[in-house]
Amino acid sequence: MAQIVLAPLLLGGARPWAIAILSIMSGLGILAVCITRKQISIPRYLIRIWGVAVVMLGWSLLQSLPIWPMQDYPFNATQIALYPNAWMGLAANLIWLIATITLSSLLAQGRSQTLLNGAIKVVIASSALQVGLAALASTMDWQTTFWFGKSAHLDDWTGSFANRNAFGIFLGFGLLGGLYLFAQNKAQGIGRRLDQSGGLLALALIFAVALLESHSRSAVALTLIGTLIFLTLNTPQTTFKVIGKRALFVGFGILALIILIDITSPELSTRFIELARSDLIQRDDAWHTAILAIQDRPITGFGFDSVALVMGHFATAGLNTNAHWFSSHNLLLDAAIMFGIPATLTVLTALGLMATNAVICAPNGTIRAFVLALVSMAMIGSLIGWVMSMPALILPIAIAIMACREAAPARTLAMHQPADPMAQSPVPDQTASR
Image (cartoon, rainbow, N blue to C red; front, side, top):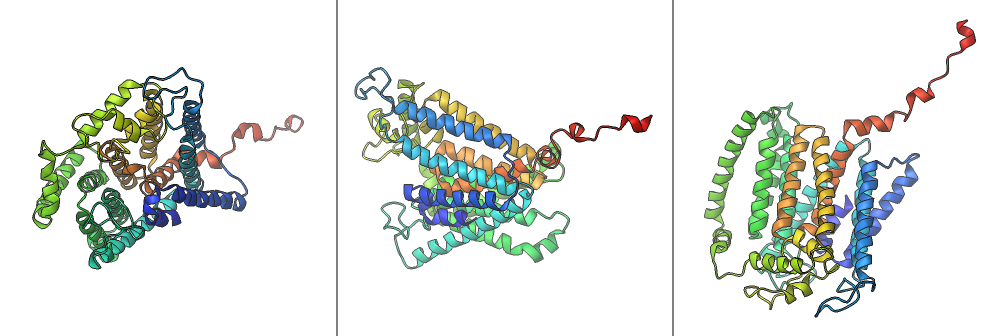
């Protein structure tokens, strides 16, 4: 819970020193769980996740060894990785990620609903803190991230983030969290819920306004998509007819909201209109460059942290080479550049299965709609940007998935039943029966 607040404050947690701090916190959490519990249950899915991480790290280490044939110019070397020591950075990131997933799984055992609700409340509180920081910087006309002066995204709300997209998507998570907590208790009427939980809707509205002030096109689009999915699927009846009517109703509502955004935030509307300009440097040039790089090494990749150098080498005519392209603005293309297509498909399959199982294991429709909205935002966001790789955005999704995974009825039953009940039953006394 502390990391949900701390990670955004540490520039999204993406810096190496921030990863180190968050890893220590996760490690201390796992240690505390092991000390305070008499018995620790390690589910099979968690072991599989560890296995995928070991395979990724092992492949990255193998890429860095000088055991390969000489590569083509200008990457002529006896190792695949352009930066042979970069695997250490991947190891640091994986250590934090696996430790956080493990801690979330351990904490969710037997109390998945408590963990999920607590995490969502902390996400809302952390979003409110970010809005406060962004509003303070805007009021005082500070072009700062509270770490250093801004060189980009001037006059955009970013809070302590260095990127407006990351700030906006994080607020989108907070907005969805407010809607989830408001819709959680379906036994109450709408009037009673407004009386008791209306503040959640007020916070969601504040987050929406702050999101617009970030002028982030991707954050606005992802939040609208996530809200549409949640409001459409959060229904006690899951028939196609009911979902269709709900989707139509919510769709008209979002259309009205888009019109309102166009009226109240002309700067953001102008940024969306600019997407149609053919002379504007777009992400499609970066994607084209990334595809050319992948075609050069489709199987082996170029090693971890190699995207910037590779993008510079394979740059198309339309790509602005004066910019620092540390990402192709597509995490799947980035992964294929670094690790190759087979390794990327392996990791993508593992993530897809984990997310699918979480949605299936969700204990009720409201949680299922919420998790599906989060996963959809993450999936689409990964296709149009790089910020979904930041710890501040990974944390809420990882906790929600682990909470749902531990809520599976079969998992709960297996925890409380012996492995072989028949083998533990006493043997009947044959002499007594005689």
